[in-house]
Length: 397
Image (tube, rainbow, N blue to C red; front, side):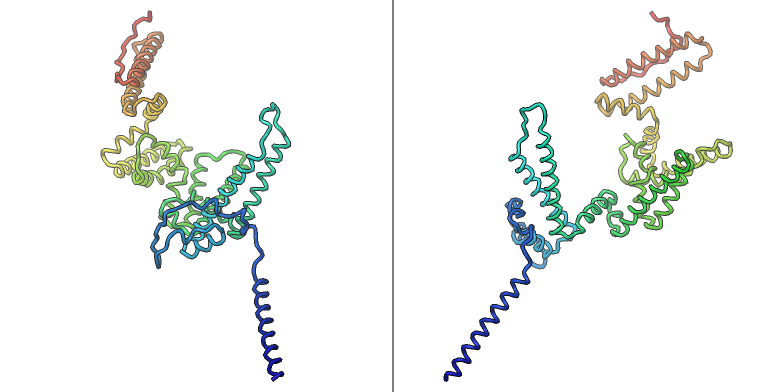
């Protein structure tokens, strides 16, 4: 009997010992508390009261199930509902940044500069910069703990991607392709800079076109034909030039695409011949310009093409700029343009008039100038007047 009692006591002691060892092992496996778990970095100040927004997935849940005052729990909850990694990163970066902005503002209240003095307190300024630097370092360390060591590179890459690759076609490129294009652009810029340094001058217009063609050839190795066109529409120098030339035309996205397709290749070929003035080349340029005009007429149609031609006239763009600067009504652009045309035609007529001597010619030109200025004032005020032909000028009084 006594032996049985001793045996039972021994078994009970062993059970207690096993339980204590298991608890000790669990405590050892627990991660030590990190700054991310500190109350100082709680999301409590960022959690906003919201109505339970019901979202459909495998089962119904409300946003209150996702919200948490703890960053780690919040991230875990977001992952549990299938939130994309990129979205989680952007949310956490934004919230941690907001948290540190509030901390910076709170600390600024405690440290006030001697604003009543003429000379600033240099020590206070240095301390303020040091405080901001420490806060920035602390913020980055917290984000590294929450998102991993590569979060900053991923964030910068995502920012570059969102700025460069817009639209359905380019936004749909893989991250690898996007990065390959950015890397190529960096290499290409360095190559072109090296070339110009070795030449000791800027590229000529013909050389520019040659380098553009080479760039497009290299890009075609990274992108499909559709992707390359989208890239050129957004980032090529020729497309940028077209955007400038189309000011005031009010083009739509599809119209711009049509104009680009009608002009792009022909523009480059014409530019490649710009440095040559022999008759054969000049004839070829005229032929290319005629083909370009036919392409544009087909792309824009009979109603829009005449207006397109008008907007390509420097006098029209000058009229647009004048109306914008004077804050006149947009409807005054056309009368002002017609005035400029009439004025220019009258000036040309006077210059070619063989019946006028030099004094009479200068007086006639001055009359045209005064008439044009008066008519311009009336147009911008809402009264449309076109100057009349002057003939021989009356002697000035």
